[in-house]
Each structure stands twice: as C-alpha cells, then as structure tokens.
Image (cartoon, rainbow, N blue to C red; front, side, top):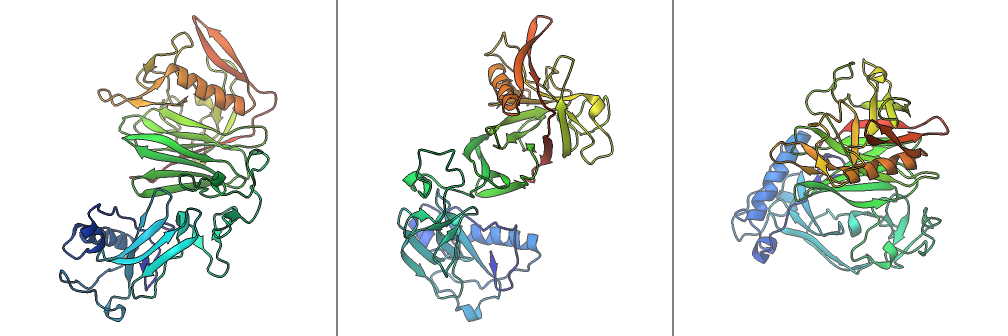
Length: 407
C-alpha cells in the first residue's frame, strides 16, 4: 500500500514481509538491518510496477526517523500477518514498528499502539476491512460483530449445515478457522514444492479460486450466472501442461475438485495437432461412441479454430484392473489434448512428467461425472474397462479454461 499520492499496487494486495525471529531485527530495525533492507527492496520492486518513483529519508543507525512533515509524500507500510491473516504488526519503509494491535480470539481489539502519523490500517481481524462507523467487519457475504462474536445475518448455507448455529463465527473455533469470503471459495497452496488443496468454503454467489504462493495470494473470480467447470493452469516443475479443476456446488450437486494434465509445449485448436487447446470458454456435450463415452469439449472457445472434430474428452487415466499403478498420461499417450483428471499427483524428477495414480484418477473422474448428473457404468473395450457416463438431459455446462498469472 502506497500512501500519500495513492497508487493501487496489484489491487487488493498489501505488502507482506517475513519478520525475523530475532527481536532486535523485529523492533529495532534500522537501515542496516535485514528487515529494512528486505522491505526497501520489495517496496522498490512494487513501486516500479506501479510507475512510482519511490524515495525515502535514510536514517543512520540508532537515530529516530524524520517527522512525517519531512518524509516523502509517498509512504509505504508493510503488513505482517499471522496464520489467520490478521496483520497485528505494521512496519514502515525503514523496518521500524509503526502500528501494532492485539485482538481477543473472536476479533475484539484489546490493545493498540501507533507511531506518530496519519495513516491507520482499516484491515485488521482476518485481514478484513473494519467499518469505523459501525464497528463491524465486512466478509463479503455477511457482516461480523467482533464484540458480540456473532454474524449479523443467517449463514446462507444454514440448510446444508443443520448442526451448526447459523450466527456462530467459525463454528466457535476462531483460533484455527476463518470464514474467508462467504462465497464458493477453493484455496490452493504451494507446499513442499507441490500444489495442495487447503480449504473449501461453500456459499451462494460468485465462485473464487485463491492460489497461495508464499505470502502472495492470486484470486480468480468466476460468475455464477451459468453452470460451469473451471480448469485453471498452474506452474509446475514439469514439461506437461498442469492445473486444477473445480466444479462449484449447485442445486442437486456437490462441489468436486482435483488436478488435470494435458500435453505440454505450444497450444493449438487445430485438428490433428494433438496439443493442449487454447484458453477460452467452451461448450460440453455427452460423448457418444468411441473408447471414452464421458464428456466432449466443443466449440472454438473464442478462438479461430473449432475443436469439435478433435474429440477432446474429459476422462481418467489407467485401467480398472491395476488400481495401485502410477504413470504419466502424457508419456504413455493417454492424452492427445484430452483433460485427464486425478485427485492426487506427483512429478517424476527423471522424466519431468506429471504422474497420476490409476485409482485416484478413476475416482476423481467418477465424482465429476456423477455430480454433473451422469449415469456411470463400465464399458468393456478389448480386455479393459473404461468409465462410461450417459446423461438423461443435454449438458448445459460451460468449460472455463484459463491461464494463471503466477510467475
């Protein structure tokens, strides 16, 4: 956040820097200490992105920062959040503590301190915005009163959570749980060099995928006006094209999500290219005939070439007879542009291909087809059984295929 001449830097993103465990670095930071150096480097990077020529007054070790009147008009403050997203400590560009506050477990402010200055953060408990006039926090779907420790309106999913009081905040467990947006929200986090699903929240409204990499969060919003399945490409240490899929919850269906893989390299919608299709919004129909009678992706997705003739399918990897086997759908030729699904994955460090487990791939595909209303059975082709799905009514779902902007 750049103060003074206010400039939005990566909208809805606030600076965050890891605070050193050394108290000297945390509370006595000066221009010579690691925290100050790290924050200055980050600030300059984001300022350049925003087209801001950022300068600041240098402080000699042990001296006090200059008064606000002598500082540059553009001021930078860093938020240091805890595991719940609550940034209890803010530091200035020199790594000096600027604002600190302490909450009770349900968010009521217990103590606060702030250095001389006009700026005071509005984003406090769970990183949500505090309305000064009412004292309520806005979470997107509902308002929350931290004094009463209660929501001000009924949980929009009260019917699906019949065992919970609809006004309770985080099931009365605010130490480890949060209520991020009040929307259908899927959280994906990079942990130990792997993408893992860390949270799913079901609610009315638009659908959101939040991807967490270190201290950065990338959000992807999708309108709920039409039924859809989301396929989002994510960066992975592989030569394949890799990502996650997400079918949001809806009437008579549960949400389901997992991983997908398609061929790496350049993309093309052209017939016989055997490449991953171009990003876009495509139609889906029931695939009749052939080895895979599941779902076919059709249309041009807003691009030049129509892919209908290519026979792009959504299906599983591997045979029913070998449930414990792992392998690469790309290396073994199971995808020539098709979307192959699984609920778990690994990357082979020798081949750099994504590998799926036969059983998890079959179950992930089964769950998706079932929640789309498919009648699931096995189809014998040669010596092997393949999943087959028939639908009583035409499929009205769109396939949203999108690239992420994660470096």
